[in-house]
Amino acid sequence: MSALTKEARIAVIGAGAMGAGIAQVAAQAGHRVRLLDQRPGAAAQAIANIDQQLSKRVQNGKLEASARQATLDRLQPVESLDKLVDSDLIIEAIVENLEVKRQLFQELESLCHPSCILASNTSSLSITSIAAGLQHPERLLGLHFFNPAPVMALVEVVSGLASDPALAQCLYETARNWGKKPVHARSTPGFIVNRVARPFYAESLRLLQEGAADCATLDALLREAGGFAMGAFELTDLIGHDVNYGVTCSVFAAYYGDTRFQPSLIQKELVDAGHLGRKSGQGFYRYAADAQRPAPSQLSSSAKVEGCVVEGDLGMLGELLPRLRQAGLEIIQRDGSGLLRVGDAVLALSDGRMASQRARDSGLRNLILLDLALDYGQVQRLAISCSADTSALAQDQAVALLNRAGIQVCRLSDTPALAVLRTVAMLANEAADALLQGVASAVDIDLAMRAGVNYPQGPLAWADRLGLGYLLQVLEHLQGAYGEDRYRPSLLLRRRVAEGRNLHD
Image (cartoon, rainbow, N blue to C red; front, side, top):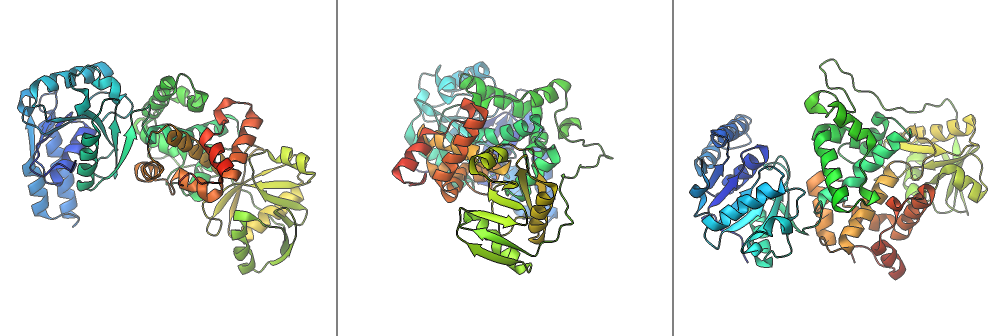
């Protein structure tokens, strides 16, 4: 089924930030849009706010004045549901309450013509459950925009158990015509993004709770080593802890208490205290006018290093070698098991074990493990952890070596898989389970995470690049260290390793 034409009449119910944003998107795409809100005057005020935003874009030279006026001319505030009876698509963006949404769609079904498509912008409620009370549940789908809707590219087109696939394709093509990047998803808790993204927050929260490092250091590592736009603490402060914690609790409950989605006691305490992030002026960071952002903790070294020894294939860490040569260091290469030696220190890429555990298993002294980086050829900051017997001199020599390559070094406590590696491993693992369970295709999962939350790489593509065998090993070591089901590797990951295939195959 093809996209709705520009002649199709669109209605949006709910004139809050999300509903107004969706109305703006549809109007800018050329549709006449009616905006309804139960609060008197709210729809008209929302359109006035849209006018202000568009006027600023005109003043900044980012929008033609004629385009602004044309968009405003297509927007119409209305005060009652009966004004929507001839709509071709109605998008609901009201309170996240199942019964309220059910009642609204039952009223709409009785008012509107049978060919009208009904869509919910819900971010967490089941489309199947919302549609259950309808005479024709096949006409209801999810159309989940991300906030702010005029800016964010992703739209999840969500099909419930009864949703008509032809209508899902129609909404997919319509969203694409509106300049969005749509993906298909099955109605399961969290859909794609709100499910797959849970480990991004959860692993940083656990590291903080365990005292592995402070917020500023962990955030800096995810940004500067992992390539993420923001770290978990600054992002949850931006989202609002009431919202982020609420979504986590919703997904946790929907999956019957699966420990992979377990909420954090640290975040609960912030919510209980009213420290909701930017909107309350206090979260993990302070946002008062005089507040100073804490700096990440990093190591310095006075050790002098002139060269290093590479034993065997360093894998991804091999990207560091051109940087070391360019810095004037002598590199001696010989056979071995993928180690980098400098002075007394032995460096290796983390495989998910604690440094002390790996040192004992391998018979190595002064073992220092390096965290994952998106690109070792460009990374500016990297985490390390040290085995218990690592001397101060060995640590200084390792830090000096990395500093010579232009890399700032942050030491974490001896924690399994460090920071970026464990976060990426768990994101990939959750994405693999979503793929296994038919929530979405591999291509759509990766697109959703790039376009919806601005990840530097889709988690499935990242897993394929790292190597599924390596990723499985990291997860098995994480699970072994914690003894928790939370870190169980996905069956699909195990299957693809056994088959010698990638997740995108």
